[in-house]
Image 1 (cartoon, rainbow, N blue to C red):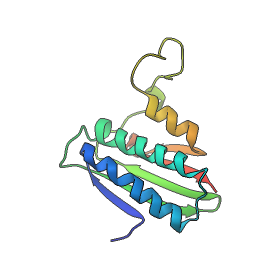
Image 2: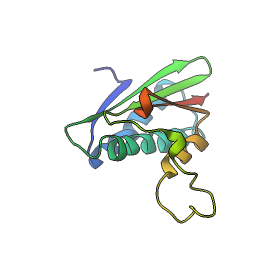
Image 3: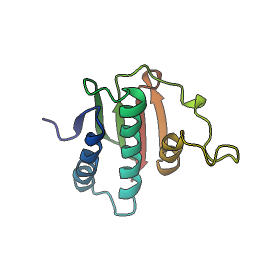
Image 4: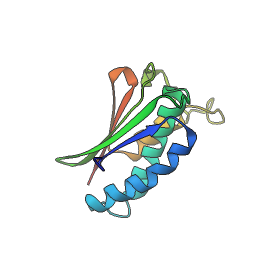
Amino acid sequence: MNWKMLKLRSTPTSISKIEGYVQRIASEFSINDAKFPDILISLTEAVNNAIIHGNQNDGSKYVDVSVSRIDSGIRFQVSDQGRGFNPCDVPDPTTPDRIECCGGRGVHIIKELSDNVEYLNNGRTVEIQFDL
């Protein structure tokens, strides 16, 4: 199995596998200690969103996570088997009228902690880039 790829069943317990995956990536790509938490939090949020919102906690569906080297750093892809979504439809959770509401925080956190985020495949895949 390719260690740069991770296939997770869409169950809450799968989230626990993200930290070990990020630790292996950090070692392989010499990621500094300052960038590690941003990557860990962003990937955890992306996988959590894919499991809960994308795959609707359906244990028969999977979330695929992969990493690749790019010129400026690394890029992660997190893909689910759901129907997709439009990230522009997710309200900003930092506005005064939404600050106490749930929802949309994961998308916002990923955007804030990473250097670039793109949604592909009708929102079923998120690419998260970190400059190193």
